[in-house]
Amino acid sequence: MRKVESSLKIVEELKREIEVYPYNEDVFWSIEVTKYMSDFKIPDYPISLKFAIDRKPKLALKLNNNELPFGCHGINKPKVINFWKKKLNF
Image (cartoon, rainbow, N blue to C red; front, side, top):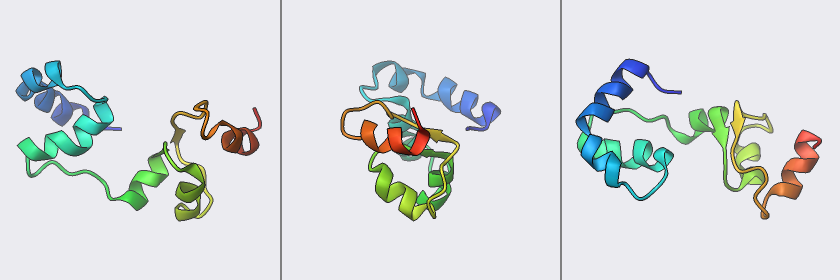
């Protein structure tokens, strides 16, 4: 969840970097944008955990007071699928 207006401005300014960026967009927004724009704010991990969990879901849920976040990424990956099957009943 990003602010649309400021995100579009960044996309326009960093278009060349985006076109050749080798990693996924989450990495770009959380690491690369801050290199170019020091005033760009990203949330700390407690706030991020409320939005999404990807890797190490058992630890992430523990850190998030066992509350499921808004989104869960990669739930069908071999290392975590059994964990998510129990939590999400699928």
